[in-house]
Image 1 (cartoon, rainbow, N blue to C red):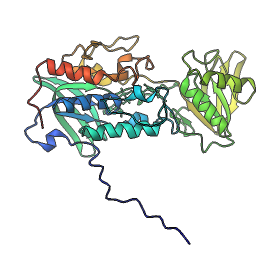
Image 2 (cartoon, protein in one colour; image 1 turned 45 degrees about the vertical axis):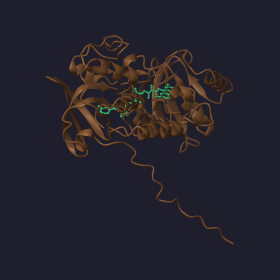
Image 3 (cartoon, protein in one colour; image 1 turned 180 degrees about the vertical axis):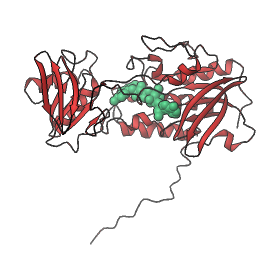
Image 4 (tube, helix red, strand yellow; image 1 turned 90 degrees about the vertical axis):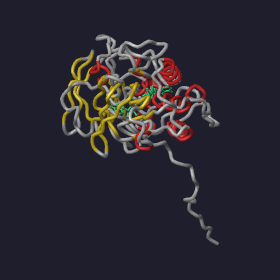
Length: 360
Ligand SMILES: Cc1cc2nc3c(=O)[nH]c(=O)nc-3n(C[C@H](O)[C@H](O)[C@H](O)COP(=O)(O)OP(=O)(O)OC[C@H]3O[C@@H](n4cnc5c(N)ncnc54)[C@H](O)[C@@H]3O)c2cc1C
């Protein structure tokens, strides 16, 4: 007898995923307490604390909720244990010690839902201007251009939208990418991975295990010292046994149709056939909005001037939070060691006496 499967009930009410823009909900809210740019873990932590304090808050994201993590490699697992990724007191209740990308996304969505954090997705902020009573924030989204006013602004735009490029000819060819998602689709392909950090080694190993013929090209003489402790030996052993080819102390000079990488290294110039290339050489912080507003940014390190206690920048009422605070050294500040930024910012904002009457 055939067994029938009923489809999942459409009546399960999880409630709205996020809260609404306070200005759309209540016309008396003409000026927000806090406007947060970026709805990653940092933006969410600010939003949750602001909601808890009864402030009017809105998060704007040019993508969707946790849009950077959404674009990480599909099968990626965090190196941080679940407890250290928690924000706003919401438990990350999974049986595994370290969440996968999918589990982390489900968790941060739950934080947004529990606190009913107002979030406008697919709305990119184009400018922040200081005005008499705070800031004027311009954004562009599905309903066109919008302007909002806020007493304080939090910049939490991370770095994932700005991958480093090599700056060589052919980098824009369709088989060359700065984003690696998954190995499926590369069976029996010749794949070149450029880079020597965690992202490059992880991609190289996954591609090799899915049957691709992988070459890693790295300008250093070995993988970076910051490599995850379980990744380094695995990679070194695969290179030693000849399963993965490594071109150390080598640089790429061009990508050429119909599928060539040209470079040079200690052994002289080289040219290699390939079906796909992944350039995984890190990121730079998205600090353009801060720079345009007048936040002081170190020209060498790109570290913005912020008070570490409060996250406030040299522009009063403008906060810079999360991984952005690390400047070019993007790996120095991550979720684990910045998840208290939300509480610090909200406490400082409340103490500054700017807060409006609490919004119910
Ligand atoms: C592969 C990988 C693995 C990682 N593993 C770990 C780990 O195990 N543990 C850990 O603690 N950290 C880890 N990290 C780092 C961690 O993911 C980041 O530190 C963290 O996501 C930073 O959070 P954030 O909220 O500051 O920025 P992001 O998560 O980058 O969020 C920034 C948001 O801002 C939005 N945005 C940008 N510009 C604009 C704009 N102009 N207008 C509107 N929205 C905008 C983006 O769409 C994005 O949603 C990992 C990173 C990578 C790449």
